[in-house]
Amino acid sequence: MNYIIETDHLTKRYGATAVVDQVNFHVPKGKVYGLLGRNGAGKTTAMKMMLQLVFPTDGSILLFGKDCRDNAAAIYKNIGSIIETPGFYGNLTGEENLEIMARLRGQFCKNAVPNALEIVGLNQEKRKIFSNYSLGMKQRLGIAAAIMHKPKLLILDEPINGLDPIGICEIRTFLSKLSRDNGTTIFISSHVLSEIEQIADIIGVMHQGRLIEEVDMAELRNRSRTYTEFDLSDGQMAAIIIKSSYPGTDYTIQNNTLKVYGPSPVIGEMNRNFALNGLLVTRINPREENLEEYFSKLIGGGGIA
Image (cartoon, rainbow, N blue to C red; front, side, top):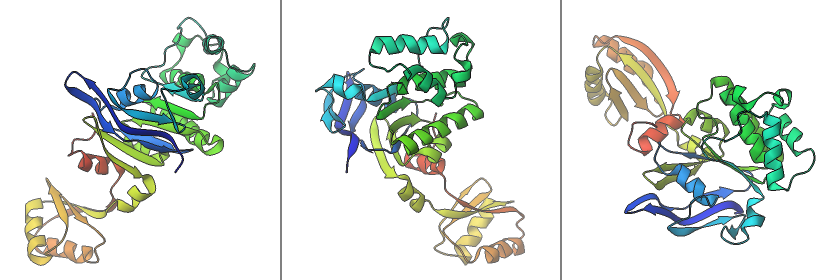
């Protein structure tokens, strides 16, 4: 497998606390890798180590198959990144901000700035002062800065954080297109599970500094369990009926919502049995577990902060 990012027991400690603890990432070429985790899980620190903004306590990082400590200039010219909030001069236009960055980097062609603005849909707003940008425009300008030099790898920390639904859709569409059309490898962290689910090829889940899962999305979808959800007048009575009439059934009950897992040819009969025992069934809904439900189970409930 040709990995663009590969880490071996990557670790960062502050005192006795391991913020990133022996993490092994595997990011294949041309794929979108979605890194999920609650705030404080270690996602940003791991990304900072990949960019040499923070140095590991232990372990190693291979980028493009090479140790990131060797030939750093050659390696990092092929990487674009956004870590935390993109920083720009508020009194300058988006175009002027990018031109300054281009000159400082000293490696871009004449059309790098206008091309980047066009790609992210800001070419019509290039004269607008940055301080007048919406949050979505600011995020897109950050991505424009990250892609000006046509990098082979993008490392993006929460690029859709705080965006409205339209802004999220725009960023999602752009990143999907960049990966699909240009073959750009994208390593993206987020706690917006539904958005990562729509664009990622691979999911990594961090919790308390550890990588507790790394799975291909296709495999994850195969793992997702189907279930039938009942809203009832009395969940505990429903549990008694299931135990007596349908032993071995995989189910859960929360308040008065019953979930019966797996394909079941007896759902209609079960509903009839509930009614005969005086239970009011207000809704029956066949469903499939989504990424948020999977994630919550994986880290012990509670979702993402």
